[in-house]
Length: 350
Image (cartoon, rainbow, N blue to C red; front, side, top):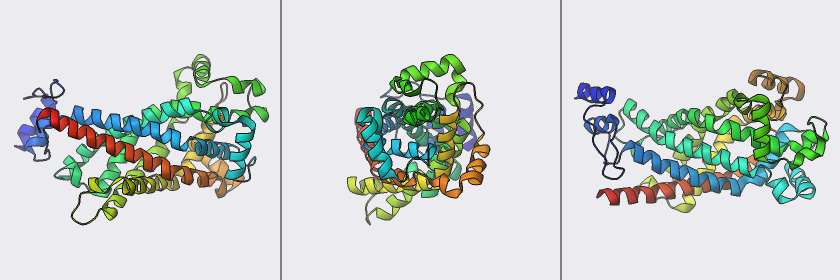
């Protein structure tokens, strides 16, 4: 049976048309059924579409909940000597530039970053869960252990990094533009504050090409892959511990889901904050005509010149922002997935 299943996976034999999507299912579904790993008739493509939609909605919610404190985080990471603490940075930013151009600076690229990252992340997370469950012999993704889910999240983050890096670079440069201009590190001075995300993107493409948008990609990998291991691991461990006896983890309710999501988000940032500091500085400082430092150069340069404390500058507002923002992300994702799965099962007669 295993040999026949592998033949179908490799050579695409015995594919069939899915009743909901109307497209040919890949042989992966047939292999899952024969190996006893698949309980439902939905295709991998349809599951991925549901995960993609949930990640998209979750990404939008996350931005509007957490953007002001994300701006504070980036400013404190890239210019740690300008602000004594997060509250001072928040108030000064609000007084100088207001809400739209100050606290919500970079919202458009932040939306693009979070929507693209979370859509791709959760889409590949579902696929990676199936791969991990197959490799480990787990009966279904619903009964995977927190460790297996954490590994799936780390794998999925590799793919989401390619979607995140360009939009994150634009966001960070817009958020730190005032500080760059006032310190003479940005051509055009304060007039540069008028440039928007699309103008900045065109400028980078014109002067540096497509590779200019991927400065900091290595740092993004260094942040995202271990980060999402802890992200999904913390979330799943929390769900496991907070699930009442006799209930499934999908039945813990909205409040517990928000708490679990918040714990997952805090786990991510505490684990990988130094890598995020390096990434932010590389992306902000890598203006046209300059060769950005490597991740290791930046990391050891900060340690040598500023001390270990600089690698955690901005962690406070990040944790404050992350708990409600990530809680909202998972609540939106789980709710979307729940209703999407129900609709798909209803349409397929499952």
